[in-house]
Length: 219
Image (cartoon, rainbow, N blue to C red; front, side):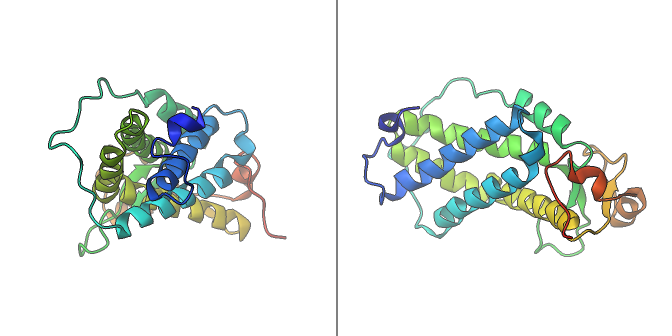
């Protein structure tokens, strides 16, 4: 995509919309490249960096005043881009550490952790961001900003935050030379309690995943 297309609001690098769109586009391009599998040795650290940078954009959107779209009804964008292939490629590359346990709402008491997948999370975030980018590329900057802000609160913000925690935990286990617990056989269509999650967890030593996933141990 050319600079003229991306910077639909002008070339001012201090423009809030331009900055957010640049960060969104950077994430979309980066995750698409990672999913190709050309450099699996750097996949996990690179995803950790990209998700961290995206959440900076999300934090800025969250702290910004409510963005009101120009039109009452969202213009039809046509069919949504398919993210299934990206999801499958990420799942294959991240196996066996794709599944992790997550508590969806930390302010709801006594909610047990549930299984989730990094690949599913990243694909869902990509779908939300691409939707807004379609508006941005069409010159509907306010609509794009409204969508990115709304979907940050309603979906991709919490999803990306959970993914970041999983990626950071994975890197920390390896860099600190600590055994990593894998949810062996656990899948996201199961509704398990915290005890069942613990029982299902099987130990996988960090060195078994350090090489394939581009991580190194602290000596």
